[in-house]
Length: 413
Ligand SMILES: [Zn+2]
Image (spheres, rainbow, N blue to C red):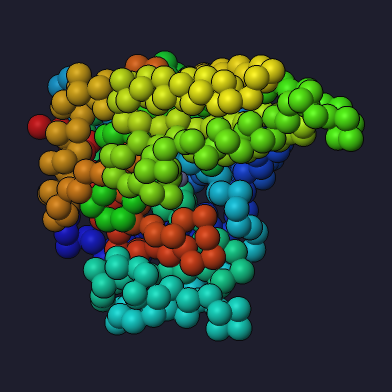
């Protein structure tokens, strides 16, 4: 198959360029699902392409979820393996009128994305560049994101499916593919029908430099602290006013500084004050609690309860309530019950000539939600870097490598 690498690379690039040309930006303030109609533009195109490849059950539903299954080429029982990528792009930077710039045979050094605007991908800040010498890279033009997150995942899956159809001699079981909307606003699999998808286990292809694999995410809770004080004319407030802004300020100062997103990495947990609204009489603070274990998350909650209590004692008259709600859970404990899912991935990556690099995700994934709902779903790298920004870039060699990894994963024995 390696002899086909350049052909696979060329096809993956064509697909990638076709997909990034379509604006699919999500909108976190939209009341609709999907959050933007334009995500259907890409969904419809993918259904059309899948039908043209000969997959007659390719379809998109009213929630903008694309599904299709490639039939098995062998009669012996094989697991049904699923692959997912997301259609939408991030909210931070526009994804409209993306103008890709292709750099063939990258020779090292800084990449000037837009001279006028001073958008540069510097070698010093992008250690990954040194590992891409000789590769084909793609950037945007410095006025938009590229959309490699996650059109790289889509291009890799579509390329692999196309290759499998052209090579019916490759033994494999049923392969299920799905493309989902609104991942960037954490609603990616809200209406995802696992039963209809029909996979025994699956892989998301989303984010991470070549080799990076993820079977571990944060466990996450959302906390809200509401405070009621006493407001009145400041001229007659002595010994009577209770100012919740002062209580909140005291509370925030007491949050552990060595447990903040800006002071932690790897497996370290954090408590993150995210938004604060209020005035003298009433205030509301939203916080994110993150840890890789449920015990750690329970510890954070207790810590927060203690801080709320201590602060309240300093300001008699304030009434504080703390509400904690679960957001998502680390997928590792569930995935440990299905070691064959990660073992299969690791072996496929090695066969593609890449050293697996298991990294914890300091966030959640659609795969974590699916895993919690009973479909084991670790994550595979896309080879894209600087997602959600004007300096986003993608290695086309990585796209071909992922397509190879997918083919190795489904290849039966
Ligand atoms: Zn993504």
